[in-house]
Length: 348
Image (cartoon, one colour):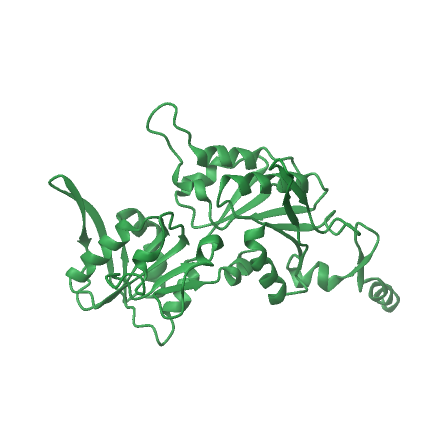
């Protein structure tokens, strides 16, 4: 037995990688945690670097050159292939951001190539799934882009195990079933980041509000488990003559410090109307949280600096959509950007 153990100890310190080099077991197994080779789009490079800083044994980042030829087509060189191939046979993590159609196509070029590079597994982290709001059509000729994007994923080359597409707070949960075959959705939430903020001794928030019944059904159980004594308020739109206005449909915010919770904000009209309804009903203060800040028409109407009439005391968002949140003012304004990185590490 002693002889066998000695032989095992002799060979345990290193494992042979696909290029013939040696790697320590701590780098390969990390006590049961996968080690990842990271490839990132330009918008998520900061996230890639933060992951390496957080755990340099678990994550190794290989910068990619995202260029264009003179005719506007892509000129891309993926990191990690030269001078030594550190991608083949490895668990690869691709950090994606589909914030416009041009970068989406560029990133699919890279994802396709990774699938054809003999990787062990491929995880695509797409925190914000931008076409999730276009999952159905009301007349012939309209395109359900949530479905077509899912088909692009589902028809990627097979690599053995299905490609894992990790998404946070997908707008419509049924979108997960659009992915099939070679790519499967892995659904996660940014809400735990908010729970940590609300649990701080300095937080005065003591009431959760939802802009509609759908958001309440989706998220309320998380808050009733974390803060069982907090009241729940549900808002909703009702018709008032020719207009549709937001009113409180259930719950009482009088004297409470409320936070409105939803998955994403675009123009934010409903959130602002909901905040107004809560204040008219006696709420002491109103804050908001969304996982995804989109703001296609800008964020200035939510800012206290730009708009004194802004109804929000604090507006929490995650950096799931960094092309937007990197531009938000935080010092001396209402916005507070919560870093999704710690949650991503747990979810991986």
